[in-house]
Image (cartoon, rainbow, N blue to C red):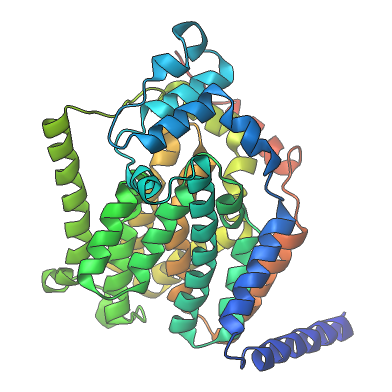
Amino acid sequence: MENLSVFLNQLQAKFHRRLEHASLSHYWSLYVVLIAVAVSYLSELPQYTAIQEFISTPYGQAKIWWLENPLQAVPVDHFFPLAERHLGYNAGCASHCDKLTFRIALPVLHKIAPFGIWTLVITSHIAAVAIFWMTYKLLFRSSADSVSASLATWALAGTYAGELGFKDFYYGDALAVALLLGAMMTRRRWLIMLLIVVAGFTDERAVIAAPLIALFHYWQSKNPTFGADQQHLKLSDLWIAWPTICGILIYLLMRVFLTKSFGVSSGSSMLATIDILRAHLYSNYPVRILKVFEFLWTAPVLFVLFAVNKQGLFSVNSLIFPMSFSFAAMPALLVWDVDRSLYYLLPGILISLFFWQFSLASLRSFLQLCLIGTLVWVFPGGTILRSIDFYVSSFITFNK
């Protein structure tokens, strides 16, 4: 056993040295992104042949109408007659179209590049590539270590979150998340505000995740080591978060203005029902929830445990991250598409890696394990996790 441990350590050190040598290339970030795209495609090939079929469906026609008519409520009854609107798959499609009124970023982009549904598809692909690039650049900025930044990018690529931009022909979530990461990348205050506003008009969930951006910029300015001198939050420090706060307020004020001026509103069908919560507890856990980030879910857990160990359970640094993270995850409890909603937690995952409080060697080892796990692990549909789920659920009763 000792010989095996020595062999594995030597193998890991050799692999890291090879990566370090390769990363000396001026084009290394490009290579990292290309490998990430390859990992994402090999994990789950996008079904491009289904796009043409999708265009011919009522749902596809409704999405094209939405792209061609910014800031107008989709006439759901026209595409989904009342007799069909509450039946199975059509019910979810109709509910989604009902909420598109204020998601105007892609329709406005479609005015510039009018390619029909391909505007959404191409934009999602570009956003997915941008997410890989920004993931690498952000984590390299933190550690100045190309190995850990590369491993994190590739580990992300093999998860649902890394694949979504390439197989999303319906929503455009990758654009919203890419805009949030762009707000993390830049230090220009006006650009942070602009990116958050545009992300909000891509999908409302981006605004709910925006406090994570404020927290990132606050901690980045403080370079926290979670020592005893950083247990208290000063009000004078909150000015660092004002671009994010202003972005959220501008988005909300613009929605009120658009509602009052144009008389438009967004639907709220199929939101926060007991059936949704039941589905999450009985059906969506563990697969649809854990698959979003797979083993990278452990990064924020380790981050919080370290903060609690250093500063105590009720210190600011121990509470503010899990509170922001939980707030960003809240939409997942309210809607059917739990995996898409959890996708907006990517800024939180990156925060926990950016401010990694352990050694660089431990970060490399952790991300290497995440990458290996992501590539070889097939999520269990009927293993012990599912057995535990049904056992716990058997004690929970819902009344309609």
